[in-house]
Image (cartoon, rainbow, N blue to C red):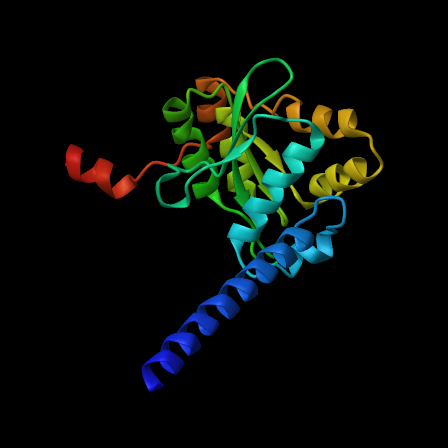
Length: 203
């Protein structure tokens, strides 16, 4: 009889665990509903994975039917992939950062270098925070679109107001480009040389 009780107890534990997992999944799905999420909810998310999943749901809700989330372990720098209304494949890196921790250069470097792998024509970084000046500059030279906290708030507002086209217009707008020439670099002394290295070579 004790063996039967042990088996019954084990089965009961398995059933309860499955029920708890199912309830947890349903609760998480409700919590990530893009029509209910606010920027404050995003700030309270436990980690970046929740933000990635939220953005996936957001893009599907906006009308990007082929939007998909990449596999986290081998995403090569892209968290989401979608096709815009002009037929261009775009990749997104999601950064759920606090305002006190601006997104830096690596976000632009990673998403830009991922473009050939995904055969993407456009690359975008979306953050719940802000960007460093260096990040903005590198994005401008490489044509990477940056969407910051205020623009994310606008996208959320437009979705909830059923103004999906306005949100998509912002997402698909051309990135801010920096088109300085080589002469501009030299004139403005933006290019910093390692003087000690030059000295070692010359002498």
